[in-house]
Length: 404
Image (cartoon, rainbow, N blue to C red; front, side):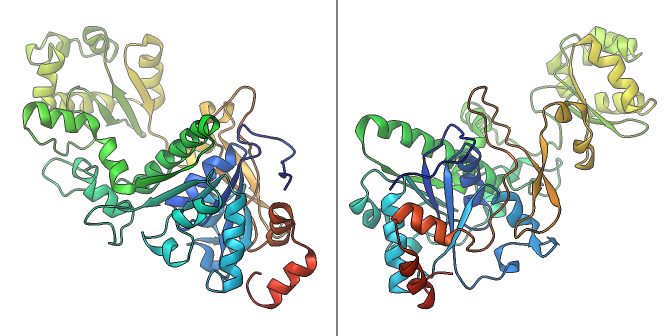
């Protein structure tokens, strides 16, 4: 069938993605493809209510969680428990470039939608799977979520203060990092297919992606035998490094290139003359004393005043610590239009703010501002566009309960 193209085409224009994902890890991966212009068709169960589509809080009855990671997609509702629904899903997969799921391993096999089943009718398909532990290994069939991935993959062991308990990182990096790896792998597989004509299976585990993040710590352990530990916001190899309280907020100081000049700028020439702080290794060794001195100094002026002193000198990385609310007014993000208003579905009035894709391409930019789909909103449109079905055929499936 002729492929439906959006009016403003991104770099993946013409790529069809059949999306069986739910929660965060899968939808965040397919969102990247949708932002780049792929036609992503999200498959959901016909019986879902709007609140069952995602977590709260809810705005005008819409899950803000679902809204955030499913914008820019189409939605089709198929009951995969019915014979007609399974056949329909397999026929759609026959027309897809990419099929994505984040079910526990074995689920798609039980539905008759395994890689073997789909690739037998569509050898060009990229069959991408994202799960907690991957498609192999002793933990394969265990349930797992973001916190489990951060714990098993090592990142949680590094987050928190020395002597304190391990802490989950405040955003769901267990889910989202794996999602980004999956999107990269899909793009690589699509590129390779151009020369071979063949698709392949992609297997990304949340836990593997977390282990990949601690590459520096892994090589340090291999070289020294010492297990890297929690250090709060400090850096194991550099000092000063991290946030310091000012009289009205916080400032981050890191990667100081000229220690004597830095000390002079903050009015602490005495620190430059102190032998215990005279080199980076010595500052790391005496980090408690160093931070105590710097904390006392930074607390005496405002964040804006310290930025005015340090930023023009260009001798260290320095920044205020933004709250989420600050992101809306920060001049850097405003100049790059990084927060956009996305309209609500179902013709509801109003919009909600979301981050724009950070992937900025000069000639075929990522698409922006497209809303999330309503439940089953594009069932007819997709079945006609992808499969050439007649309206009478769609009505028969709907009467049988196979689609919504």
